[in-house]
Image (tube, rainbow, N blue to C red; front, side):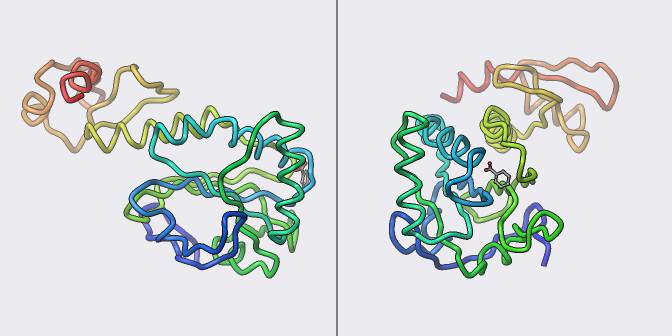
Length: 216
Ligand code: BEZ
């Protein structure tokens, strides 16, 4: 079953480096950044785990909990985390799921046989507190992910939810937002009393920073 945006993500129980979890319960009221990588003790994965750990305050500030996965055992994860901490100057505290029998990798379609039959590709699942899938990205084994983009898209999703707006290409917090075509001009005047610019009838921009400050 292919996972589609808006679907409730499959629940599972698993052993992790922080003990056994039931995935939906573990997510709780937060969001999750669930990401797979091919294998422990591999170079690109080591940098990605290190980067996620270094960014832990950024994830916490956004109400997002990271959780990794590879098709290795908890014991292998523990040994590898020592290397991650040593080489990436960090102390990794988020859980890494053990999946030696490939149960979860198969459930989440993290195995792409043209890349490998047994090692996961670099899948990303951003999951909200309703356990709905909000974004997926899939990177190949030999290219590490861009963590600026992962944080940016989390900011964009949360900004869209909070303000009922869409966000343009390369949007960053503080940039102008877009009024979705489903909102009429009349509705937009009520919703955005600060005013908005109409560049085309279908392309209307709004500065949401003032209303965000008012709501703070
Ligand atoms: C790596 O993490 O460096 C890696 C893992 C599997 C294939 C290629 C690279």
